[in-house]
Image 1: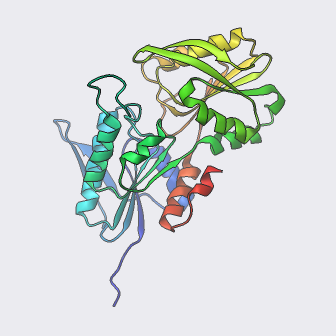
Image 2: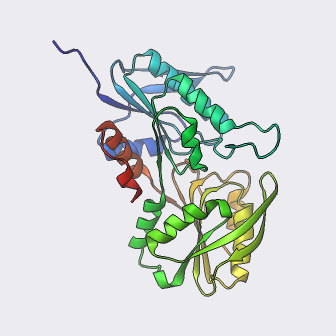
Image 3: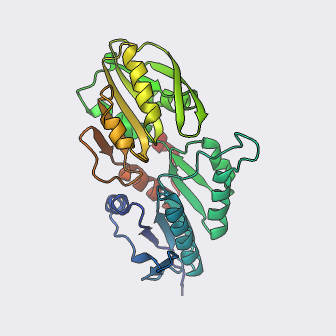
Length: 317
């Protein structure tokens, strides 16, 4: 008699339940029954209300703000599923918090991205599925498989289906030197020219735009980045791009962190016509200038392909 059981089960933490429900709908599944909760002193716990013994478990939980809360919740969930004898445990982390602390920029700096990788691995994770890691080398911090999906196909599909924008009037702008590879992929996908901004960071969360390399005159500039956090560097970049003669400026970002008064700042920056971000991070009500594009199908397809041992690289095309 064969007692092996390795069904697939999908669970969600509390960080982005709407995205998890969209992914489940794409896969034709229902989310598993589990209840992450807090004790009165703030400690995290989880109740799993169904068996996972011998199953392949996928946990959807971005480690977005509040980063420490959501990261700890994910770690506790991993531990709970491991102790409940799940066969495999894959963490689907659409937004990977602490990814910007990936190296020692100064003496005595921590490399917190590596610390988080260690925590996840020790907790019992067997695979990571994430989206647009801020630094691609973070994949090497793990000794388990990491599928780093790209948002480029999602944005490219959106613009190709939208008849408002014409390729001869568009230019992709990388907001800094570090994002050139990412913006170049987007420009290549749409067959567009590329412009590059030179940016300096005198302090954390403070950016100064020095110059713009490339032609944006009389064009619609698509500023393509992985993260919009405080919004200050985007606002400064938009002002310079406008001075260089751009007709319109549209910001595209995989992860809309929008910390502090970022939404208000961007809303009150007249040079920025629109902001597009994915739902990798759950957003509260945002003004009309902001548009949220779903990555549920992309993540759902990746989960299905991992589960069936199919190629995931096809999703990068």
